[in-house]
Length: 412
Image (cartoon, rainbow, N blue to C red; front, side, top):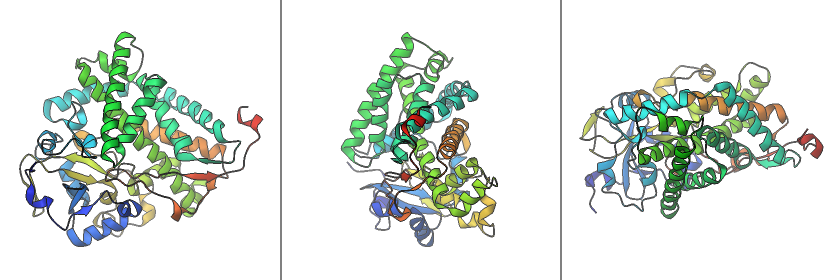
């Protein structure tokens, strides 16, 4: 099948974002991109799938605030992309706010925002602490664990399932499907999409029969009158934004604290906070490093570069946040506490759950550091592996060591 953008797809200058080398050191790759291409970089998201990666802060703001020329609707693009393409499940059209424009976007976003805004923040914090305590109790007596799989992931998964009113047996399948979608293998991504669709449909049916005080039930009751299919896709978006990225935000922030001695010293001296650590990571290693995808319906000129019609335009939050033109002459310490980063996006598609994500991640990390003040990496930082893929910034594991507590203290 011939794509509607044949020329750029064949460019030898395209940089592959799916290779392990890119995942191992993306910031070095961004520096090379700037020297060679400037703010707008021709890339491949998977073999044969061209896109433009925006690595300039001002250009990103221009695009994110211009939904008429840069809508988020991929339906024309995906007509020319096989269903077996591994990145398609993360990019294809769904009837939700993330992949819509105009009145439909406003309708979906209103329902999601109202349902999320009704979450009680005090109850949420208490719930995170309860889940963190349970997770910690599973490994504290051992003196060694993988904080990504044994702490960050269980917290993200269990907290989100509680917010959505999702029973464990359905939530486990949703988490499995979402994890497969984030992988770079075509068969796994397609299978994940199928698992995810079936599981969220069951959750919708359950909350139609048994409404509760949760996000799913509030979405069902919202005046937007979402259909069953629309409901399922709102939940796909919430789970997609709530499990993998939140897991990686917690893990990446813990890694920052454990490996940056200057930052760790200021944190323990009370001169900085866990929230500052989160914002530092959201600047440099945001869990969704390259996303906020748009699809211009006609060729658009940005700074003398003609972006092809219907070809994906991705914002590199990681690269834009560290754009040298943005930080020129500003000391690194000045970024502490600064929240001008693009990690939550800006414009009409700004993340509606950023306050919830901040609270969950901050509570989880604070609880861990209070409980295990002598925690340290179990392997040299240079030996940590990052999962390949064009979108995320995600560790394969985060192995740590700490003084083991006697068994009876764990559950005291």
